[in-house]
Length: 294
Image (cartoon, rainbow, N blue to C red; front, side, top):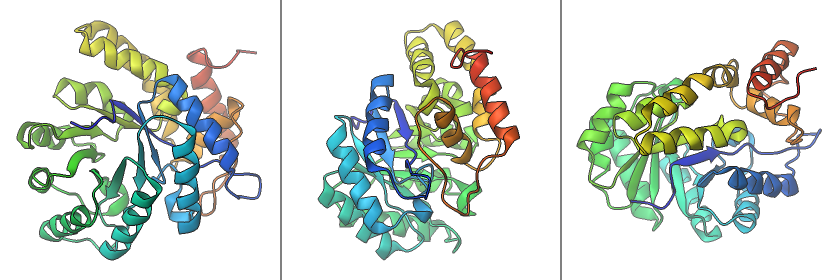
């Protein structure tokens, strides 16, 4: 079992008003997330706007955050080219990160054997532990439970971020994967159901603003207090829904800005949040006591 813990946040990439990365703010945000209870951070994931962040920026961001906090840093390195993914992995390994998040290749729609070969080659090229990332809503291709299970037999493929939304698929991997293989949900709405079927934790977006609640929910469930865990789950339905009312990370960056964290804009092609998004986020956060009601 890895030492990444149960609550991993896929961190946003703070930027200034011109869309340049604010590395000082990135270090500050990483420290804040750790203080709130996050057990590891994903840097350069989808929530970090990886499609629009350059290779040089990604390397510097990993270096800055790794130096800022004392929790495992997992680098998002996946692309739709196996060789490019390997090159990214080796750069991240040189920086000294603790693991790699490798997404299913997007756009070119590889079949299941191709997916197996892709991940196996990346794993062979690095000494770091890998977390597979299945998110068919973004990649256009679902990695089946059978493929994930087969990949779990490779020694340094240690975890899966399952964001298909299919709880049966996730549960099948939990049941059939190698012992010690950790299955995380990538769906904030499925944290409690994931734990209930034997999953390990979450790679979260919502934990940017409600990590303490998520931590309490996870700990309550693990202690056998299912009623309390369910109560927290129900409490978080609205904020979770609003965090994904439009393309991630537009809402979560807006939420952090509302809270005074000043993480800046999203790079195009992700436009600024609408007034409706802002208002609905404020409403949801006010209900949770995160904002003063005026």
